[in-house]
Amino acid sequence: MTQARIGIFGGSFDPIHVGHLMLAQAALERFQLDKVLFMPAKLSPFKQKLTMTKAETRCFMVELAIQGNQGFEVSDLELNRPEPSYTIDTIRILKQQYPGVKIYFIAGADSIMELEGWMTFEELLQEVVFLAAYRPSHTRAQLESEVMRLNKKYQADIRLVDFPDIDISSSYIRETIMRGGSARYLVPDKVLEFIHNEGVYRDRQRN
Image 1 (cartoon, one colour):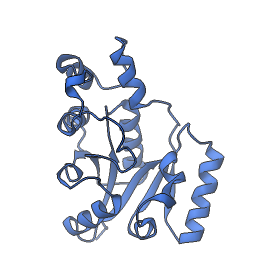
Image 2 (cartoon, helix red, strand yellow):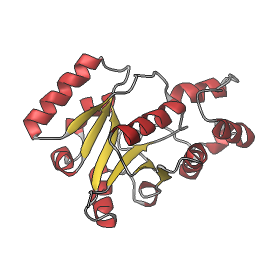
Image 3 (cartoon, one colour):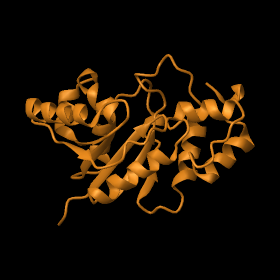
Image 4 (cartoon, one colour):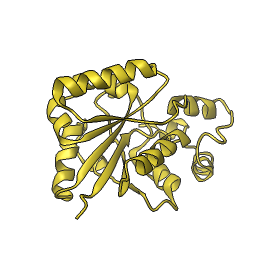
């Protein structure tokens, strides 16, 4: 029997955008994953000083964005845990929920370059396969070199996702909307409609 493969894609998703969706689809197909779990974070340990949109709002935007894709699901696991949320704790819970599953953790180049600063990162490297996506924050050569170094030093399994380094950020989208600009083509239409109808990026929606 083939071992089940689940991809984990965590983040603030404030808001989720087409870059997130394209990366998740690429990982789903390239590594033959059974599904990708989008896991909105309640509060990232690396973003504790930032103001974030309400967790329920961000989660709902993800639900809107992935409608119709049978390979995508939303998980509220991190939203229901005490903050701040650490990846290793999430992985331990998932291992209990999905016995015997092989977990693939999708991460951008910036996360890979900072991996040794994560809590109990060495244990994490033994528990999951990291899928490293190119990002404009670092050159391809820098990411490839770091992946080789980490794999060798920690006997890790970090694999590169052959995916174009699209320079789209949630912060840029928020700023664009706040100044009255259009975020069309940057986020799915259903998400953009929800943002405008609900005034998501007005002060009343921020934590």
